[in-house]
Amino acid sequence: MEKTKVEIIEQVKNVKEIKGSNSMGVSESYYNPFYMLSKCFEYEELEKLTTEELNNLYKLADFASDIFY
Image (tube, rainbow, N blue to C red):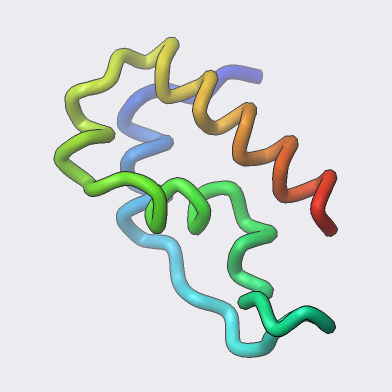
């Protein structure tokens, strides 16, 4: 299900870091696709993207968070 631009940007803006690390010392927060996007892109960069572009980035981040878990 695709998300609106506002939904994605708001979730990225409000994402919280999770305390704890995996066995390789990487923050557990990176398993959250919105956290991953917040660390990869500046808020202003995300605002410039279209809804389709944001959904594609979210889809990639969601896939990465599952595959690296």
